Length: 80
Image (tube, rainbow, N blue to C red; front, side, top):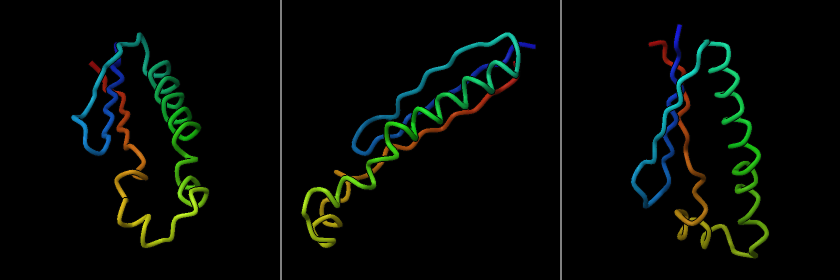
């Protein structure tokens, strides 16, 4: 059965960005979903450490929170 991977990115101050990809099997979709999530962690997982490297105080970081907000991603497989 055909399965669709639906991916939506939510980034502070920007409109949501979405795309979809069709797969022949649910297993292939699940693999692609895992890859997107692993890539997300690889790229954005380090953002939490960035404020510490700036030399800013916790109050300054909180005042500028959107700068340090990690994008959110929604990744789901849906059978057609």
